[in-house]
Length: 172
Image (cartoon, rainbow, N blue to C red; front, side, top):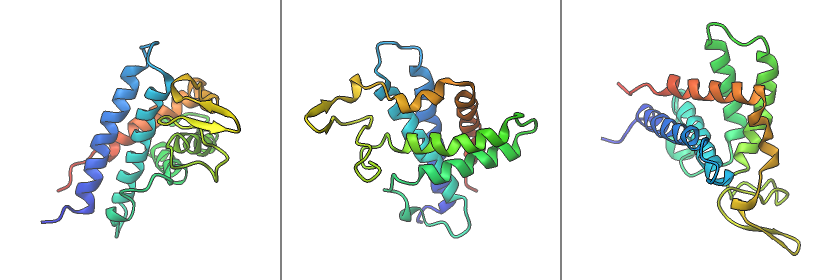
């Protein structure tokens, strides 16, 4: 029997949790480059978005299994939904929801196939060049993701983690 969309949703959520918890575990290791840590965050966010999409009526997991360029749209929806289901949402929930779109796009751009029309070649996996300069991910600071270290960024990460848990419901 072919796995259902709900089965796929559970599988994506389960792997998203493993990726996210690996990202968390790596935070205490100074010698591990940011690109390695951020790679796990990018993968977790991609998979939570796929888990969310699998829960939608009429979902066809094969339509988005190999895609990487939809985190910016779907992660914001996942976070807004998580905010609406949080018993005591933060007072700055509207601000967080608006910041999530920016953060989600920056996370999406960490994948090497998402380059914003060639304007953003920086990614977590492969070296890239701009003009005559060659950049290496393990030496790059990813300044566009400084939001992760601000209070709003930390709250968004907690919401993402909670949303993964919410979507981690085994298929019946």
